[in-house]
Image 1 (cartoon, rainbow, N blue to C red):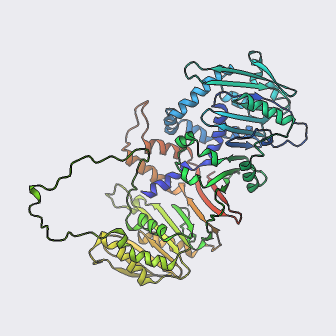
Image 2 (image 1 turned 60 degrees about the horizontal axis):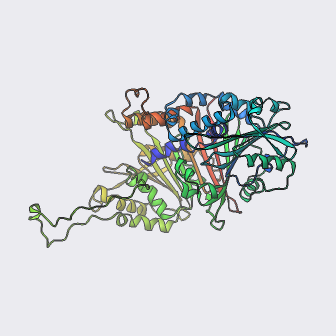
Image 3 (image 1 turned 180 degrees about the horizontal axis):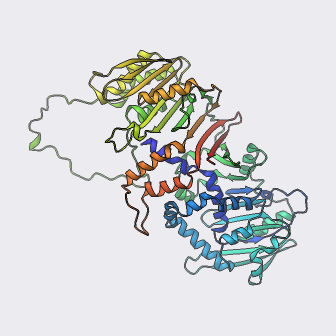
Length: 591
């Protein structure tokens, strides 16, 4: 069910909306915050990263954090998420419990709760959140507020309960307290200096930041190699929100490995740093990402993907086009989508395999009729069945491959169908072109072990339409094939093939040089996806109060409901001559 994982991946990789929430939770939801306010004498505000000490794991920056916070807290997405099953399940998780414990410890130490009202009070304009330790929840938060607003911080009313410290000519206040249950020591510190506010979980972070503001000569976040390299590759920040990550250090953290939902640490290891910029407009959100390769000598080969992208039907399905696919990659996709689709095998890498401790049995009275002098019939292996197809692909060397899938509707299924079919297709572009007889022969050989003996009964019937000839497979397995010069399109059914050929006839033919281009249309796929989740969970009745919601029809449906105004998503990845990977994710929203 590769199609299911593709369709649900939109909710896992939706960084942009989650970053708005993350910027709020990291400030209000962690314990041991320290606050300081400092003053900048120049007319143009200095980059706040130049005031953050070196050694951070990630940094989140915004030119107007207060506006972003208001946009999220007043959004329909926030209300739907807080009221949904997905949030209910999250609220019972271990991670949520740890954050709740951290909030309680902060409230005990600071003397006031880090709730939404407190967060709004400390949210300024130009802001920076630098995270130094994931497990111990250590961070530094700096924000610039309108003139006079910093003096109204709610912590100032509690300064008599704190100890005074000095950093240069600036006074700040510190209070530490050890929790009796967890043994965790939390620290809160604050100071007032002009229009700037600073939060930190460690006294040394706060003192260092104040010292850097007065004497900008020390080691700073802006001077860290990973941060400066990512910022240089991305250019001057003009976005509404920027997040920069020290991936070389983050992937080593056991906390990151435990809580990172994508579980793609191996993929992330190929990069040393990443940066993502969020741009907002009334019509869409645009995420511009930059990733710095750990091995700059390895450069993914780009190609013009427009020859295969032209075959994507408009406003439907999930698609992914890649450049310079290997023969094995093409074979894997053909098997997964068309030749032998099956549920993907799952293996929990955290569990050791079970040892077989049984005693082998040499034989019993049921084996007396077996002839030991006759060779056993051996079923042909998958590699043998794919030999002709592998040779064909090795000779053609396609430079672009498209995979496409879409959910069929009730009108496409029979009256007694429970699970509607999933339509799928694979398109290949090769400079040398395709021979119809050779392609049909290779596909017949690949399908023979499943459908017949020696290919008997597997035939391709030629069909004609206004665009030319195409071929339909007879027998138990429906399949349609079209060859258009250098393009080979193989679809699960004639209807899907016709839609793809129609899309190609009206496409703009604009070149799109990239390594990956992908897209997803929630608007057209969402209804059938939700129907499928209800069938998988047998969710005819609501869950009892307090019980975990069903995973598919509860968690995933709730997350889908949260972002129900998402109309479409597109993803593009390119690599520049300096070996920097650029990714653009565009989210279109219905209005």
